[in-house]
Amino acid sequence: MSLLTTNPELTAVCDRFAQHPFVTVDTEFLRETTFWPQVCVIQLASPEEAVAIDALADDLDLSPFFGLMANPDVVKVFHAARQDLEIIWRLARLIPAPIFDTQVAAMVCGFGEQASYLELVKAITRASLDKSSRFTDWSRRPLSNAQIEYAIADVTHLRDIYTALRARLERSNRLDWLVDEMQTLTSPATYEQHPENAWERLRHRARKPRDLAVLMELAAWREFEAQSRDVPRSRVLKDDVLLEIAQAAPRSVEALGNLRSFPKGMERSRAGTDIIAAVERGLARDPATVPRIERDRRNSNGATVELLKVLLRQVSEETGVAAKMIATVEDLEAVAHDDHADVQALKGWRRAIFGEKALELKRGRLALSVENGRVVTFDWQAADEPANVE
Image (cartoon, rainbow, N blue to C red; front, side, top):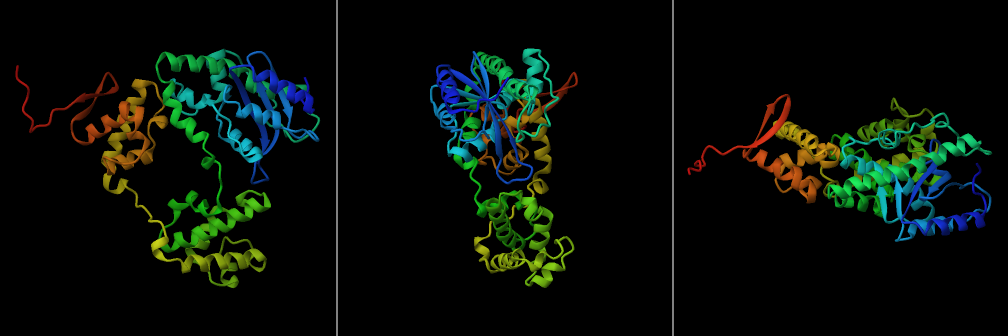
């Protein structure tokens, strides 16, 4: 086996693949030492053939691949698509569409939460994969035939997985249940990384509004540094250090250097000056512009949340849909707090199989019981409602 390394080869392959109703796609990339993922190999398979593309080949123009990804007549099939889509968005400012994510589909088809590719291969194709090359440094050349074969295997079995899962979804009339997830995956907003929004990853660790104000500025500074230098966030400053600075709010480089977790000597660099400037901006923020820190709803609705968790598990077992796909813990807390919460659990098919039951449970019109070791639900007539008499 060999990698595609020339423009004529790539153009011919993409032209052939565009004649099929779907293609399966995967990428091999590195991210350990960079902020942005570095794509090394791209794997493609049509129902008739499979190839690997050397994304690092000199003078290789990936435009034919991007054209295939943008072709509206070809479904692009991924497993756990998010990182692959982020790479394509980063390279071409393009989100492949239409797409089908087999990991998401598996959650609707009874394979549990976040089924791995290996698990689906075993369950659906009964094949076993050679994972001996899983620790390959995909940036090194040349790649061996075994490594290339390993990479291509990630898209060949995916054809059978896609066909099987799509057939199941069509038989159960659940294909439309994937729409919300695919829309999220194909939205550019999912992959845009704006420094001013970096604080959201850490928002639940801020204790006070003042801490959050400073953290917002510090996180924005770190995100800009990491992106511009193309290094992981932790190479700039680790999360715990950022949080300690936000809480201590030092106003001089000397005070910054005295913090226990702050890297020794860093306060004397340009970064030290920038950090103090970020702290000052945070302290100067108008409190009205600082997002509200939401207290844990479980403090006041803990019992309701726990009941909703039991109901969620019961619905998941009954429908075969992974609980995580139906509702998150945050959804349950929001529903416990507000019957009209703006959460996915109270919309569309999720409302039909779970949301309505959750509201009925809150209102005392639905009860939970155990029969033969399994949780079951049944209607509960309110005590103040007269019984129907024939």
